[in-house]
Length: 178
Image 1 (cartoon, rainbow, N blue to C red):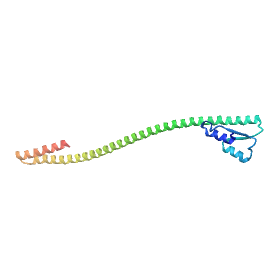
Image 2 (cartoon, rainbow, N blue to C red):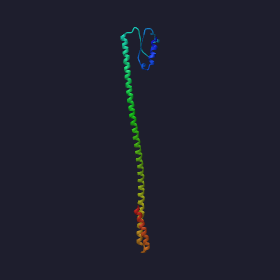
Image 3 (cartoon, rainbow, N blue to C red):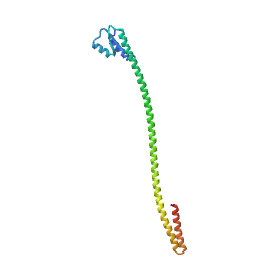
């Protein structure tokens, strides 16, 4: 008691048959609006009676082949999506490793720059200290030279010689420090 449109609707409602190809065969509902309605209900073709068996078999064969190709494309698509997911995961791991390496190199560079800066400071302090020590030694040598000259020119007074000896010893200790 169902017509083809109602049967097509029932077929489409069932999850297992939602993609089943439906070919309408009719001798009565052959107007353009009927065909449009059939296609809207999910028909893939609309055949009129009398049916030519070879023609119907050829049409069914085409739709079966389309179904197989569609299934094959779905499998290929699923495989492609799996490969894309694997590659994406792999690229993500590589990216994380690269970011980790960049962080390491950045930290190494910052450490090296800090060490270089410290070495430059120490070098500057060393040059400054060396310059000061050299100048101080020159002053001490002048003081010691003048004390020796003074010792030769003063009378033989033991108190004066003790004072000069103390000054010479102080200058020598200062020279040994620098």
